[in-house]
Length: 276
Image 1 (cartoon, rainbow, N blue to C red):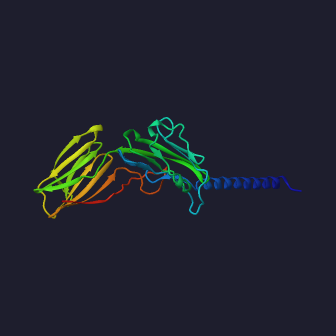
Image 2: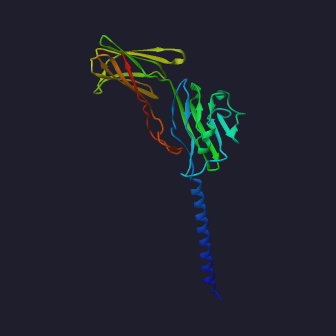
Image 3: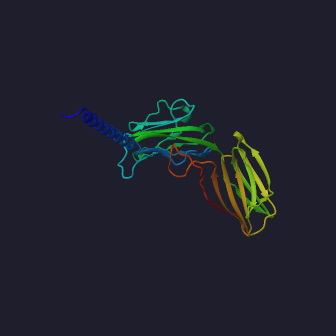
């Protein structure tokens, strides 16, 4: 016949085993739930006014997972009534779509099976700027990510060369930018710059540098708080050879980032021009 001490000891062992099983079950559920996550390639994109912008959002799942089913996607914007876009039961559901986005937004249904719920906004306007939330629910998991869209106007400059004067002009910038000329060693040069304000507060930039030398290179930088255009202009006997790229400031990661992370980065868009 078991003693009282043996009964207590056995009961404690049973309780410990029960609690251990519960902990293992809870951890298993937690890890299985974290096998998928809603992410974005850019948490703070800069959209060029008047152009289309793609807001990245997708469900990252374990490799080798089969096609995602029963996908529901909802895009909303802070301080905005209604939805930006909703997709449910295999079709768009735009009954309560905000009028600001009517006819200007779309998803790509053929990509939803792979978890891609990125939103295309056509002809970006200033009032499109703000905090967007992308929510995904599917057979493979669910979650959300927040994306802060910023708007600006920016354009590459064009160059002309005449009588040792190198002139640069860019047709649209907002907010109003600063302009800097540098030599190939990074020393600041004195240029002559003028701004013209057009409709909607969009600025055009006109700047010149003199004198310039054949076979020498000059850096022309236009920048505001959101984006910079950097051009390297090389003066030749036949004209000007130019390479240019844009650099958005404080853009969130160019890698695949979960919503809880944020990094500083930039992207480069190189272009090559030859001007006579």
